[in-house]
Length: 204
Image (cartoon, rainbow, N blue to C red):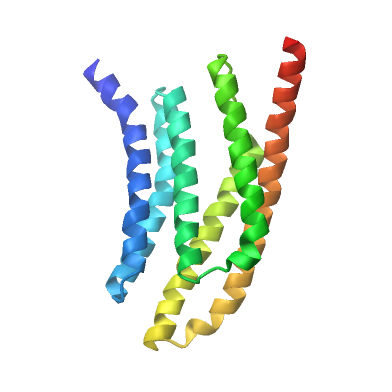
């Protein structure tokens, strides 16, 4: 019994640690120490890996729960928007360029969250769509590029490397990747909206 309780808690604990890693990553990136800069890269990779690990453990040991799904989805949003806010504030990415994407992203996430919560209160649990999973992968790639660009900009400031000429093409690539994530995000959002509309029509 005790082991089962521990198994149920482990995926949620991993999700919580991923949320806390946001603070650690941002603090490390804001330093002027090369060791901390690379430490942030390592923590980011571990945090991304943990997103797949908690879901795998929950399915592997049959401890998938509604709370775990909500917590995982919430932490994913906190992780993405937390790092994106840092990248915008530090000048890694431009709000002028990403503004429309960010607005669409927020509208979609708020709408889908409202739909999922409404249906969950009525005993209906929505599974994650494949388009939503693809969207998440693109978002992680976008953040990864942000991490790399942030590191290269540190090297540029410190005049430590000649590879900083990659900053501009990587930034442009990151913008395209985020744009792709928005496309898949809107597709999955439309699917959720369509399901809710059909459910509501049948109830009436």
